[in-house]
Amino acid sequence: MLESERSLGRPRDARTDRAILEATLELIAERGVHEFRTEDVAARAGVGKGAIYRRYGSKDELVTAAIAGLVSEGIVIPETGSTREDLVRLMRQAVELYRGSLAARLMPNLIGAMAQKPELAGAVRERFLAGRCAALSEVLQRGIERGDLRSDLDLELALDVLGGPLFYRLLVTGGPIDERLAEGVADLILRGFATRPRAKSRNARKEQTA
Amino acid sequence: MLESERSLGRPRDARTDRAILEATLELIAERGVHEFRTEDVAARAGVGKGAIYRRYGSKDELVTAAIAGLVSEGIVIPETGSTREDLVRLMRQAVELYRGSLAARLMPNLIGAMAQKPELAGAVRERFLAGRCAALSEVLQRGIERGDLRSDLDLELALDVLGGPLFYRLLVTGGPIDERLAEGVADLILRGFATRPRAKSRNARKEQTA
DNA sequence: GACTTCTGGTACTTGCACGTACCGGAAATG
DNA sequence: CATTTCCGGTACGTGCAAGTACCAGAAGTC
Image 1 (cartoon, chains in turn red, yellow, cyan, purple):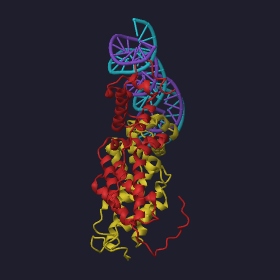
Image 2 (spheres, chains in turn blue, red, orange, yellow):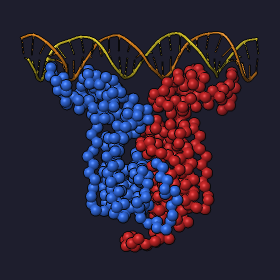
Image 3 (tube, rainbow over the protein chains, first blue to last red):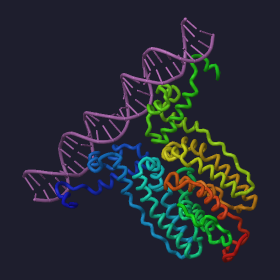
Image 4 (tube, rainbow over the protein chains, first blue to last red):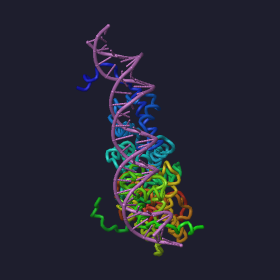
């Protein structure tokens, strides 16, 4: 069923496939999801419009495919033995990615569309966030086991404090995305969620509504 | 020269002014900056298209005016005597604003346009951020003077840690914007940037600090 | 060779939405 | 009253871009 379909006639050029998706991503980054023209995609990819519409039924489909086709970066969970060093390394990777790269210019233009198309939102979160979040979770978990972090920390909050300021600067304030940010949030998490409170009785510990 | 211009003929209806801007904001919130139609604005405002174009030369101008016409909420700097309480109150205000309100639905659709139009970015930052940032800065400054916070804290980082997670959830993850978030970031700042009288080496093992 | 489906390129149709023009009527001035 | 400019509503012109159709040629299978 799968390969038998593809035997007759001239096969599709894989370079054309890639050129189309690449040009689409660049144009989304430059102009926005709704503000680029398929004709520009064709021109930039050095391709005919026919080649685009032979692959994707509509512009919307093209956009979704371009985002879904992004290869999520291979994130390796660092194991330096130091919780701080592990955190900082992951944050450094994020800083590097969102400082000037395609992803950085892509993200602001995706936010609006994400609010409108849940499937696109899912794809973005999957490609850009899921991997790093999982890695950070793992590092935090190890930090707890190692005794560097309190066991009752709000994991979701910790992840959002690590990632939030970076995206806040990228999307809203335009502030610097640099090494200082990476180390700053890591240190803040380490100090703010350090194992310390002994006597302090936290109420509502039983009820942990998500 | 100023009032003499406006003396002849039927004066403009202030209710029409407001209806147009209000409908514009709602439609930006619902569909996005580039995805709504001026005809829809007219229909929703119960207004003719002429009334719109008599006021604004183009759709772009209308959008800018609608954002610029937003009244930035009157933020009062709390003075409870407690740095934590002051911080939490400001964060609670922010949580309230960005939980379900027009501003919350507006923001995602503005991000993309901000990246394209610097003037719009300026307006958004002015209307939505500036006031709260100034208030938070003031509270943090007082926290330093009061001895609750270290004097060498990275102010920009602190502000972004307070605001970042909220926007991260609003724009990216879709996570809960609630009281827990407000208190969580406030507490994290207080613990993470607490005054540390001791030396930098973390030799004090599990010592109970006051 | 015959046949099929690809290729980039161009010309075309079509629809949507911005912006304009005009209507009869209303609200102001003088 | 005349005049002016507003009002909501509708009809129209216009331009841009999505999507289609077709070209001549290329790259495959049989």
